Image (cartoon, rainbow, N blue to C red; front, side, top):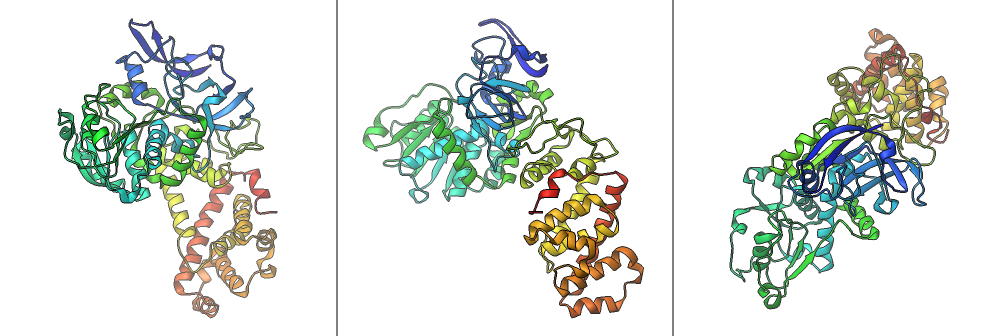
Length: 545
């Protein structure tokens, strides 16, 4: 059984929508079965759920034109194997005719509709922060480029700029160096639009919604991306400068197009239609490649989205249609209550084997139950580590979120900042003092990091066993002498110890850093020992050991 949002009813009649348990035998035909980590709530999904438009062509129907982090569990498609992570973007009739949409914990689909989920869009929440809307925005930018539009061509007009397509389009154009005029019906969001980096001017949508002249004053020099259609699109085309280009991808303002041929035959304006639903696979792959290059940093995506729980997705559909959700990007954690770890051949995720040794004597929370900032932090570490989550993150998530945040914020402040101590030297301190405190987890985990930092497969064992005979410099030995004294007998530290450090080129501020690292990991060592924290098996082979 798996959970899914199920729309039941009949064509032309009333429909009922509920989050239900569904038997796996009800999954539709397809050659790839996936476990869905994240989905989105798009405009089309909201129409389907609320019944505001006849989106569902058959019943029952599972909405959701997007999914990501889908871990393949079964595959008869040669392009995908169990353990692969995939992304689906609004392909064909998913959530419309094919009932296995993304708003379900499982989906069965044609492999031809899927593309591999690649970095930097792992963790999969990042891919769904983009979703079909962001992917469509990229297709629009590519359409402008194909028509010769460049950053020096002039201002680019983006309608619906606070919506899903528009906000991502503004951010992409900003990264590429374009100047953007953003059109929105929500002038109070001016600060948000300017934070995306490219909105130099904000235009009230009302200026484009009334019937205008067939050929208006030439205003927009470079190009335009329109998500509205209707009168808005007609007015945009009428105000383009000579040989301007308009990429049209939406109909939020209507399906009609009350325009004349004047802009096209008198000014040579080009109107490009952009379709994201049936785009060839090569175009989809290229669009995602460009998104990886031209949309950053991840924090920008976070500012564009609203995260809604799977349980609350049905209620959020109405809010989306009413324009109450910024960015139009609603990300739904569907089935992230899994322990993510590395599979044999893929940096994917799968459920942990329940027969494994427990990683802590205390209960370990499910990933999906954690606050979104903590979950995102853990998934980013998973990506950086090559696919597994260091157990310290899961074990310490047992405690209230503020304790978790404070612990790892201080860790990062000590271990990631600019300092006279190299990052490898900081790891030496951790390994040497953790060994004295008999902390297996910290010696194993940070020994792996030390091997990687130093590009030396022998260094961690040497430092742990007897750093005074390790292949390190005299300066580093002096540093570790000081750290060991802080760890084992801090009460005895005196001016002579500082003088020794100074003689080896360290400042008093460096001494503070050595002390801070030693003290922090004294806490970490004790927590790891008391919780019986187990080191991930992956650590033992990292760094060429």
